[in-house]
Image (cartoon, rainbow, N blue to C red; front, side, top):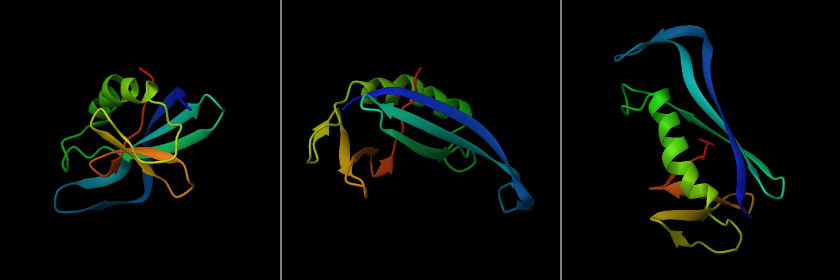
Length: 114
């Protein structure tokens, strides 16, 4: 099974109430939601949050990384099969629903169409 389509949504989600912590005041969340579709019609969603003051990642840098680094790898991957395997330094780990999700250093990664 291969991924055939991905759509990414960059969202600015307002909080009900603004708050502050030692690093920053927050009134909204910059979130990225990714919708992927496989050739058999299966659809999945993923979410990421860009926090430049924590990891140095911005919405723009996440979008670029997803489009030009992750998507080319995942669009070429065959997700068929039943056991963990290694490919290109990335690992396929079983998900709770019996399928597989790609992970890199234990973190979920999501493809996006470039």
